[in-house]
Image (cartoon, rainbow, N blue to C red; front, side, top):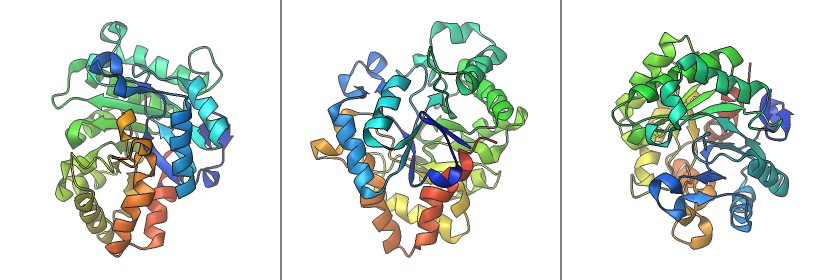
Amino acid sequence: MIRTVRGYIDPSKLGVTMCHEHLSVDLGRIRNDPDSTFGYSPLIIDEINFAKECGVQAFVEMSTNDMGRNVNDLLKLSNACDVHIIAPTGFYLEQYHPQYIHEMSEDDIAEIFIKDLTVGIDDTNIRAGVIGEVATSKVMTEDEKKVLAAAAIAGKKVGCCVSTHCQMGTLGHQQLDIFTEKAMPLNKVILGHIDLSNDIAYMKSLMDRGANIGFDTIGKTSYLKDESRADNLAQLIKEGYVNNIILSADISRKSYMKTFGEYNGYTAVLDKFIPLLKERGICQDDIDHLLIKNPSRIFDIQ
C-alpha cells in the first residue's frame, strides 16, 4: 500500500505523481530569504489546483524534518484540493541539521525515521510514506553520511522508498555505496536531481546498479534548458531505461509559482515538458511509466 496523509491507498489509485515537490517548506531561516518559505495558503491551493487541472493527482512532499515540514499543512492541502500527498521523514544538508544530529548515532537517527513511518509525525497520527530528501553536499560531510546510513537502515526495515538530494546531480555512486553497505534495496532508492548532471553515461551507470533517478528539476531552466533534459531523457528511454526514472519540478521558492508568471510551478512537467518528450517521439505508454507506473511501484511500502 501507499501511505498518504489521509491514509493508505492502493498503488493503482496514486495516479499521475510529482515525485519531488515542496508544498509546505521553510528554507528561509538558512537562506535568509522569505521567498523560500511557504505553506497552506490561497497561493499554494491555487498552485496545486493549476497542476490538478493539467492532470496531476498526487504529490510527494520532500520537505524534511529540518526544512520546516508541517504535516498539518499537508493534510489541509490534501483535503482542500482533493489530491494525494505523501509526507516525508528525513534530514537535509548539514547546515540545516539540528545540533542533536551531530550527537546521535545512525541507529538513533534511524529510530526517528521509523517512528515517523510507523507511529506518526510529531504529535499527530499522520505517518510518513517516504524517507527524503536526505542530502549530500558536493563534498559529503560525516553527518550527511550518517543520515544516509540511517535512512538506509530505516528504509530497509520499513520497506519504503528513500529519496535523496544529489547536489547538482553529484555523488550518486557514493550515495549508492552507503545504501548497498546497509543492504537497502536499490530499486527503492531515488537519486534526486540527476538531470542536472547533464551526463547520460553517468545516469545509465546509476540505473545499471538498480537505482531510480530523478529528472526532478524540470522548469528550472537557469540550471539546464528543458530541451536538454528532454534530449537526454528521450535517449535514455529509447535505450530501455524508462522503468527507473521519475519526474518533478522541485518547487522550493514562491517565485517559481505559476501565479507570478515567470515559471510554471507544479504544472511545468505536464504543461511544458511532456510535449517536449512527445516531439522527440516518446509514446504515451512510456510517459505513463514516468508519471504513474514508476511512482506506484517505488512508493509502495512492502
